[in-house]
Length: 203
Image 1 (cartoon, one colour):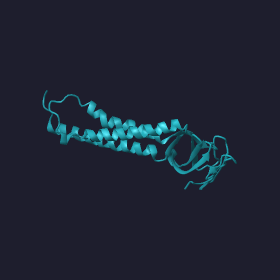
Image 2 (tube, helix red, strand yellow):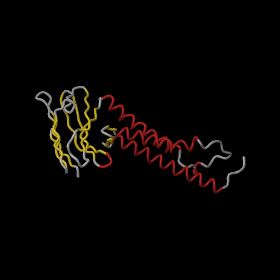
Image 3 (spheres, rainbow, N blue to C red):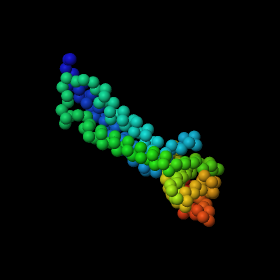
Image 4 (cartoon, one colour):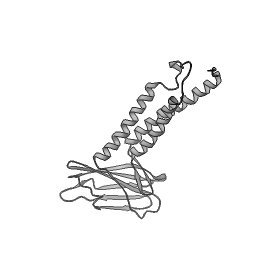
């Protein structure tokens, strides 16, 4: 096999290095996004944080591992010090991202998480999303404020006795104006919700 020109090897090495570093960075971002309390709303459908993380993870895996698989046989292996990205970096970032995304998804499944976009008359694009879960005799809820580009961030949480899901039961009031408003989640005498009042800031 003819020797590869030094310039071509250098350019290939640089591209693989950039791809590998970008993949490692994306894998870390995927792990963070899965647990950072973000959601994405697309046409009234809610994509959980772990769903966003899964998309980023898929791109990261391509960047991290495809250049290695597609490299093919070589006459002389590049010295370890000159490998685009060390194998331990690829492995560690992949394991971290897969574990984070997987655990977040399993958590939603085990606790039967329900995401809802709450209907509102607000016309400025600000929306409210809730997430309700229950385990054993305890229920919990999260409030997300969705602003530009459909990206929502968690701004409040509540707990409820006996796994009560107030939003599912329709026991809530959303008062939303141009700059924000309030979300009141109502419990029952036997299944109180704490806290019940949540401030929504749309600015």
